[in-house]
Image (cartoon, rainbow, N blue to C red):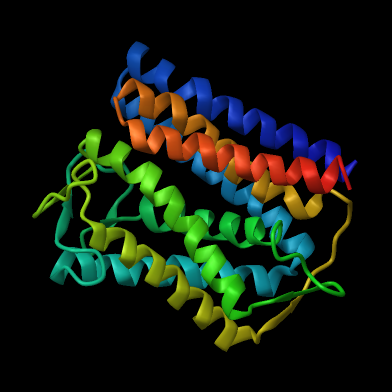
Length: 261
C-alpha cells in the first residue's frame, strides 16, 4: 500500500510539472503559473516529509532539511550582499512570488533543500547503505554535491533565460559564471558536513518496501528528463544534452538495481 500511494502521488506531481505550468503561463498568466509552481513545491516537500520521516525518522529528517534550508539561505544571502561563493548577482522582481529575506526569495532555499534531499538519496543508488546505515563519508558527500551541481548546470541557464536573476558579470556558460557552479558544489559539501557534525557520520534508515530507497532518485531522474524539452525550446543545447544524459544514467541505474537485480 505504501508503494502504491507514494508512486501515485509522485506520478501526479511529475505530470503537473510537465503540463501544468506552461498551460497556465500561456492561458492565464505568470502569477497563476507561479502559484502552481509554489503549490508543486509544497506538495513535493510534503511527499519528502512522509518519505524522510518514515525512512530516517522525524528528527533526523528535520535536521537534514532544516540545515539544508538554513545553510542555503545564509550562503545565498552572502552571495547577494557581497558576491561570496557564487559571484555577484541579484534577484529580479519576477524571481518568485514568495517574500524575500535579505534579498533572497524564500522559494529558492526551499527548492534547494529539496534538491539536496533528492541528491542525498540519489547517491544511495551508487553508494548503497550497509546494514541499514547511510555512511556520510567523503565520497558520499562529494557525490551528492556533484549530483546537485549537475542539476544547477541544467536549471541555472533556464532561470537566467527567464530573467529570474541577473549576474553582474555574465559568464560564458549561457550567461552563468563558472564560480556559480563551484559555489554550489562547495555549498552542498558544507551543508552535509554540518549534518555530519550535528548527527554523526552514520544515519540509520528503515525501509518499509523494496522501492522506498529509490523514490527521490526517481524524482531526480525525471526532473532531469523534464528539463530536456524546456532547454530545447530555449535553444540551450548543452543543458538539454546534460539533462538527457543525467536522466538516462539515473533511470538506467534504477532499472539495473530494481528490475535486473
